Image 1 (cartoon, rainbow, N blue to C red):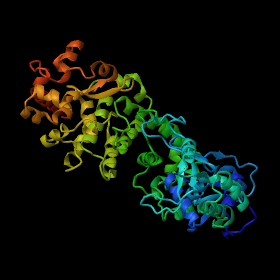
Image 2 (image 1 turned 90 degrees about the vertical axis):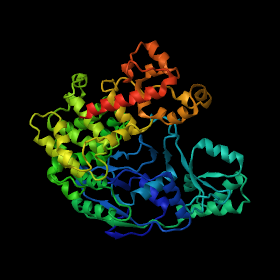
Image 3 (image 1 turned 180 degrees about the horizontal axis):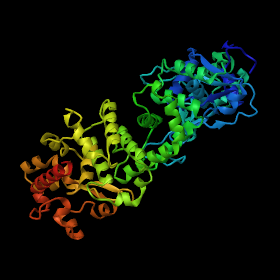
Image 4 (image 1 turned 60 degrees about the vertical axis):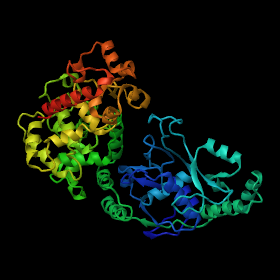
Length: 584
């Protein structure tokens, strides 16, 4: 890059921008968020370019200070995007790189162009595991159909048919002949009309006017037209550049709270982003919990700032210094809490309010219990007043009553006050419940109407999972897999012929929806569930030599399917009674 002064620079072609990325003339600063554009957004960007729509100007920070080069991290552009497994840019050693600029505004657009022309994009296929493999996450490249005009009925107006496709799909559809998918990146080496015609002639489209004009258009907008406008900021004061970054990115597509705070944090702690990303990956191994930088930063404010509102001003130097100096304990407290949640029977799917984890993390951190909560002794405790049982009970009560629905800062602050003022250092369940009694909506009281509503929950719902886990508090969720199973198998209730043999029409009407509700559900480990399957309940209970109390049913109640109504009513009444005892 030539020695340029501050201000708008002469426009460059997209190819020149790509070359600048390849030779590290364009880099990304640590304050940038990760790449987040979808394949649809990238496809639409290329369609816009082909239609000669303007691309918004970029803003670059020209780095000339050796101190900044040495003390601040810079990243290369992402070339291979893999959902969850490859979303982060790599740190680049800038030693020996002369005269480079960091992109302050326009990263998403520029990285989208780079992936579209030189990279791949991979997302998990439906019904596949999140474990990385090319079968689960097939890499896709950007292609353009150069044989015929776009005929999609999509609500989005697209003139050209760009699409991210796998190599196998491209080969198949090109062979079928209805379309011809051209790999968009190949245009970088196909500048002249002669190159284009030679290619088209080789694939049998030399006489196709649409193919010729489309390929020529693609070459012009990528290789010839100077469509990339950019502004150079040459200020060598990082604090001022940070302010420019926040102001520039706080319009149009808003930065999230975590984006803004991460920009502040990374200016003072260069590897903050890597540490947060590593922690999120570690947490994910427990119940596939997903935490974000936003969650981690909110937790930090909760621990170190009097005001926990999502405002950059609350993230002052004292908070930043506290995070940096206490990171090891903070990381362990968060990680071990999510391991604890998993051992208590929760997973990402059954933990609907991540903010509920924050006061527990604060209790752990403030009382130096980050090691204790991952030890066997902690999980072996079954006393109702043990910290393990009180934490689990509070979480389930909070989820059932939707305590963290809507704005939760008031709830969080009150819980922080109670945790900090608790003299015996145990989890203050009774104080939390007592303090909330005066709140008309955010309290832990369960009247008859609420309890009846809970037992209307059906198999597969979060509420059903929560209430069942209350009835099975001592299960080893960490070492075993548990399923929600129908006590009387659902196959009998889905077969009208079987139902008509056993029940009359009035009975069938009465049980039509009861069979799928909580009073016909149980938590059962995978091994036991495999022995049960579709066996009749009475036969399975005899085979396992289990008493009726195993199902919360009176000894005098029949387990035969023909007596389902009496069984259901008795179990429902007993479970309601037990629930009232548990939440009292």
